Length: 305
Length: 305
Image (tube, each protein chain N blue to C red):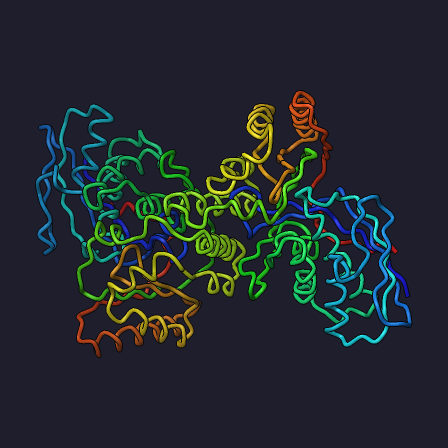
């Protein structure tokens, strides 16, 4: 019994939708191979160069898989082979891809005993060791596919939102920002006035997606609370944003807790223009970087074989 | 040249959507009659018993009408007859009905020189004297009809949202709460955690309306920021809410800044049950009250003759 899945990168927050919105992407994606073995225990092997821990208790995928083993009281074990293409710490859901990918693979291999919601819960066990907090805004889009609203994390009230076709351009400047640090610098209290602006934009963004109103999506991609704080950790942020908007981006901002930045657009030509702007800024700053032009992945995690 | 319009009551806020969501109602509604007269000036007459000022500079409708006169540099004047059925200070958009109704009537009478957005702006001039702040969450639904999102008040970015059929039950306990006081007791700063819960609910509520998902509408009708503060001003609030939910309401809360309370439901039978619960609570408390069972008014202000 063996299965291979691809598990995608994802954008979380989408500017104003801090902690509640996430979107699965077509690229990049990790590949995870899972096979049942007779002896108990999880054996993990990586075929990438990221030096992630192979001890299952320290490995995000290992912890998520253990949650499934415990829930089923499964007496056998697993051999796991992981090839990560989503660089850890990039802000495009690397840890979520590991955690979500392995639980979907295990569920498939074991005859689908669990619901999507249960799988999100198992995968969140893995995410905890990456970020120190239980959140589902990268995991849920991987498992459900497409654009996802997490209305309530405690009860996992997860709603799929129909989104129109969009081009997503991403730049990952190769600097390190720990998710836990990016979370620690956020204000504990915010002005009510700013919160009202934020939830007006959240309402606008969701409406823009559901009504396929690109102008409204663009006007609503504004974050008056998180971006002003976190953008200071990302060199070139203001220039990237300004140039990409001038190049025709609908809008964009920090992907997850950064350092990756994303911009949405409605054509391949504009998406490429945006990529060129991003590259130009980071070349000028002398910061190594990687870019992607991708789109919304409506399927999420896929069974490859 | 004479015209008569009906201008409806409206719900603003809708729990989590403080300052950004509003919904026009079928009932109650005011009637406003407007006629051009050759001499400049605004002459106002009321055919109700609310003792509202007849001096145009102190009258909400008068101030809104003056904004139109100024914008057009109109050299003649108006005779205005207002019959208010929406009691001032009830929290269901009484002042907005006056301000919005008169500008729509004047625009119609003068050959429609203004856009809906401009009319909202004129009507807001009138609202200012009622509440001391420029907001459009009652005015915009009167002028646009139906359920409306005000994404940005400064630029009047107003978006109509398609909502499914809903029954709205309202109780107006006859106590006085000034909008300006209800605003003054709100916290200036709120926890980021609460704000995230609120914008998750806003996103859920908008999605619930647009996807016609009644369950999601119900789960999202939660206000963790404004309601805990303002509900203390309204005797019987907790009991009304608890009993109405038990009777099958999807959810509800304070209408505008109160004291009216609203509950949404999906059938006339439940709407009536809810009305009975509301009446029972206020009868027990010995507080005079008025109830309405109504629905979403997708047309907004109507030309009667």
